[in-house]
Length: 113
Ligand SMILES: [Zn+2]
Image (cartoon, rainbow, N blue to C red; front, side, top):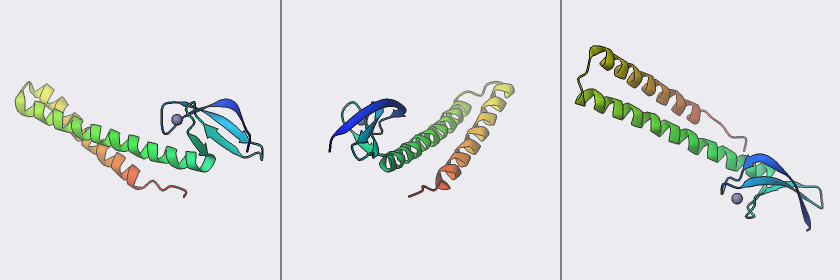
């Protein structure tokens, strides 16, 4: 089936860093294709973007845990002033809360498929 590629979209390709373009088949069916030829239907693009989103959110959750750990190490290594310790402890509490909130958000996200 012959296909025509129209305009670029604002979407990146889920399989590489390429820009997706809209691709219309002769039958009028809309799809997406990147520069190296990764192709997606609207449905498969949606599924791929949901997976990308979940992966990015888990990466952010892990970074929050790392932030907690490094702050706690700093608290152990450097007594510092009570003002500094208080700021470090506040950030530990904040990052732990952000981690819990993010994990709840990820776990309570439901796809449409
Ligand atoms: Zn691609």
